[in-house]
Image (cartoon, rainbow, N blue to C red; front, side, top):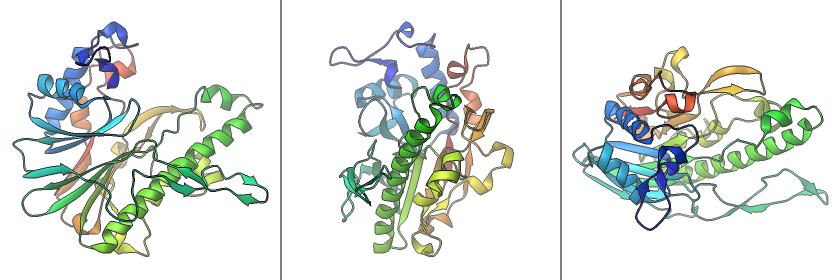
Length: 328
């Protein structure tokens, strides 16, 4: 979304379509993104990969969402910021940014072995920080306060990965880099778990939602199966032997198997074209889970932003991820 807007000058403006490779009409793309949002009609919308400046997001909200949402954020750094949009006349009575207050501060570095490299007979701990610091908000509908944590964990993407994997000479080095990236995602997932564990240990009935792009599905991919030996979403969810602090999934059990995916991509590792994967999740604390009334991956809303006549998959769809929602 950052590429929709010009960074020239202090006042944000829309870019020309010609400035963005593969996009022939930015206004039409923004309109179709808005169509997805209006179809869902959320009280709270968590955004990943938003623009660098909140003033840029405001241009979109004012022009295409009729100014109906208040903007909270951003968080993170670089060109993929995290935001929350809160509907002005919806069910939310109050909403504000929230910050770490306990021993674990999500904005601070922590010591972790992110490489798994043995030096002088021992593993080495390094100072590490989130690629994108999570965005947290506290919202109230008048009866309960819910802490919502919006995350976008580190990407698995490796430059020229397909070429490196296909070449038997470069494949071993590629595997090393791929596992290193996943160790960093794993470190972020585990840090999130420890933070939420701290929240729920202090108040087991507290309502917490963890949502966003986890960059990982519920199963184990090639690298997790053979090298990392654990699943990343499970690390964030928590320990089944500590059920009072273990997060539950908000929609996965409600979806038909053939619709239980949020992204489609060509998997060159397992050589599967148009592989359907579940990269995005909404996890909720035990104190909120039993009050959920519904939750799903909204393929219908996604279709509202799709134009089959557009050239190329990235322009045909409003996003390369399908939105999800829960209600309580």
